[in-house]
Image (cartoon, rainbow, N blue to C red; front, side, top):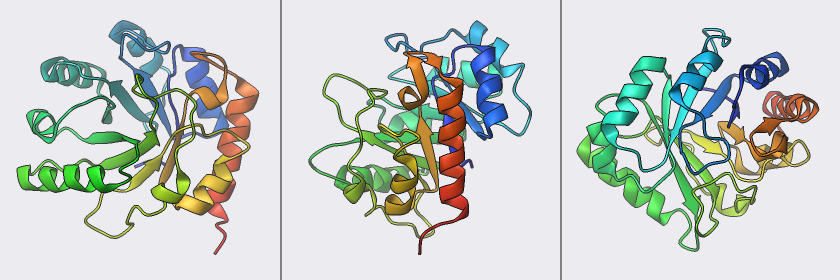
Length: 221
């Protein structure tokens, strides 16, 4: 589990920045259409600078299950993040490999999430974490659009439901309010801490991590 993830890391320098800022997870994007795409070879270079305690997350979109398993095993990723149209049956094909299932919040709200999780329970492949992102037609995430926090806040926090990770348009200026309103277990940002797509802004990364950590450590009751 993690609280603060910096996603879309594309080089070892940005990985070091995230670590030094205090993030406890980094995201490595293996979706070729993304501006933050990296090859497994580049990801290996990044992983080499990561301390053992940092959670390594691989982001995949509609990739072949066998390819996902291969990359996960070769890089010893801690979590597989599925950000496409992957079905519960797809998750079952990944075996017991831990999964973050991302959902893009549309007009139907959380209902599709609950239906999906119920099918996962039936198949015995419930994700370790659920990530809620903003819906942007034609994109699978990373657009900088803010999710509807009032809907996300309705996600249940009891045992038996995967913990919630909040994403979608989070920056240093709004992450604390997002945490207070949604009460998510963790937060995830990519474009919100960048100077350009795939290039992290060190000052923004530091400010984001500090704001998020303060919100987690000193919640408003």
